[in-house]
Image 1 (tube, rainbow, N blue to C red):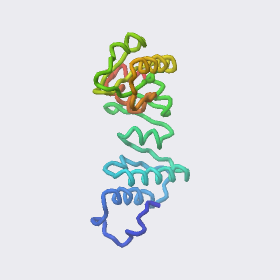
Image 2 (cartoon, rainbow, N blue to C red):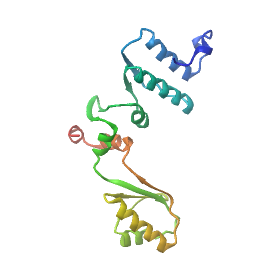
Image 3 (cartoon, rainbow, N blue to C red):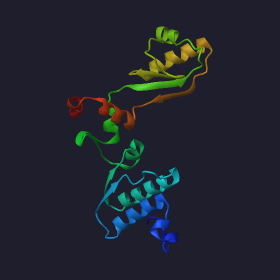
Image 4 (cartoon, one colour):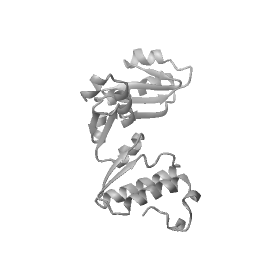
Length: 192
């Protein structure tokens, strides 16, 4: 189940870090528990080993096991968890499904793109009536009316003869939720 059949005769010291993580999970499964606690099982794994661990955890869930998983990787929580609890200083500051947690940030979505250094972003703000945030060459525009704002941004880009590289509409992520809660004073975070 943990993909170590070919290592059955090897000593633990000979296993890679990822293989040791899988062995830890395998040892936890020996008694066929209904509830399994996994404490950051993918920390230090390369992307391929991490994916394999995700597949194993999904297999446990599909087999009817309850898995309590701690992780600092919000993409991992988003992919694997039915419900997520975010802790801050040992206290629960938010809980729910991925969608519920993302929705807790409100309905602000971002339009993001890259522009050349000589682009007239001042004209974008005036003509398109949007608020721009610049991070190097990356422009982020918070929007509550994505279709209308995106239309105005594209019109501005056409008039400036600009190619908006890496143009995307980005819904808040679990990383955004986590950062927002981490930066909020404790009394504000508890209200989430």
